[in-house]
Length: 324
Length: 307
Image (cartoon, rainbow over all chains, first blue to last red; front, side, top):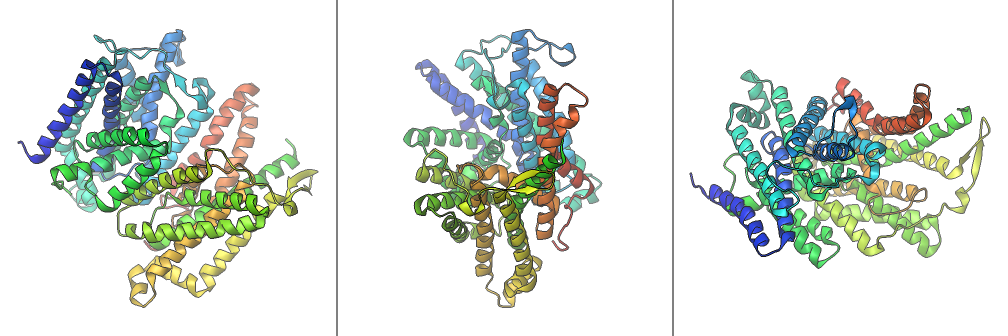
């Protein structure tokens, strides 16, 4: 089915692959790093989009999961490099696949706890409570000195992925790109599945969902946990990209940015997060080159998008979304 | 631990609570009447602090600065309401969150543009310098006591305004049924602008008062904003009474937690460890309190009867 949206999606995916390949061929690794940033932010927003776009759960605390992923990468690699065992005598590791599993499990458990309490409420309460829980994690990271506290934690050597040299920008980009595609595929599968249908139905009409015998709370909690897991994976990659993790990854600005990415791209759409991340990084790069105060203009642009262009970039390129 | 020290910490907690009440009252009023979640409330707090610091530096008078903080924050609030917020009342909360998030970016960078990256400082006025002696030979700064007094006065004022005046009657009516009071001939758009400006002025006043205790800098409103969110979630969104009790609960819990938890832990583990773990636990304490309250009462302690 080559609908207009599918065509736009395909072009976006190919552009994100071809641009860094070309940049690398012309000896411009900076642009490869920029593309890597886009891929990782898109993955983080993709995770949030599962809760926000499909489930209608406006989580203002996904930075917590992003940061947990980042800290998983930082903590595991710092233990591996110093040969100090962690809790229960477990060794650290520099292997990305192992780190990812740890990140996803840790974030999933935290999301289960946060979600179990937050999902008892809805609307504005849910927004504020997820925000408050993320701040709790943030303040914990700041006041816990073992892993750098406020200063953060450096990752001396980027963690490894079997079969590639992740210190090369292009190789690391390809790893991130692969994970992003896998994430998008998973999102598409979930959206088309019975579970995805229930999640979207719970957003559209909670009472009807309950009437046909589905418990909206459980569906939402599952969606929230999966959403957090995907975002934490992006967090682990982000820490490896910067080779640094700090509480700023957990800050509420980060949560806000993730929502912004989704809105810029188009809420609930498969490639919305990617379109939004590309647009956001492009803004940051273009405006950041012009003025130190680029966030001022970002604010104005964002205000304009919210007030006047509600479908986001994909709404502009590919027409209205088919499902409300 | 002496009685004097405990008393001092308790007063600090109440002072923090009073500040949070000034913030939370505006937030909860705006949500109650207009159904709007305003993230930029912390920016208005910042505007108040900067206005006070700038005018106080220019004229040499803290009191003129205080008036300026009220005026500037109310004006900024009214302008923002007329230009942006008014378009958001019918939108869902996601749009409100995003638009007010954008306003934070604009306010923060705009303030940096005007005042530079360095913090400003605000001196405590001569009248309120010095300390008073409390029972148990403790001394406590007059200025902090004055803040508590101001907060109590404002709480009383709000109670009278909302309970006893015509404007308050309209605000209450707006909370119960927006369409109806519009149909009865109340100019609801002006009422909304007024309520928003009132909430903004309270936030600005809080910023100016705290500005003399801390440095005045960009981003100072955000930690307070999030604490104010915790307060109104605990108190029940839309309830001024809930905001008052929630603010005092959060202020006292946070301050006493930071003071007592390390000491409590020191009974079990060695002191350096206790300081570290206790500090980390104390920073999470109010969120734990919030979680417990919500687990029991998902709509807060004093949920508004309607909505």
